[in-house]
Image (cartoon, rainbow, N blue to C red; front, top):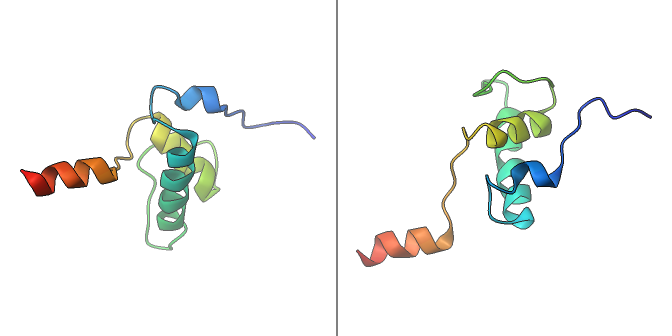
Length: 76
């Protein structure tokens, strides 16, 4: 079995702060992409929603908020 689509956790080290957050953000975006009316934010090498979500994260097109950001906005 060959790996036609190499993606490494190391590719994301400057894009997202933890592997756990990467999994959560990518899975939420993949669910959005799986809907019939959705479109990818970047050209992608795959038709699979999960791989498209990872491409979008790598290219900085997917934004997310952490609980700390929400808390800071609430306090201000």
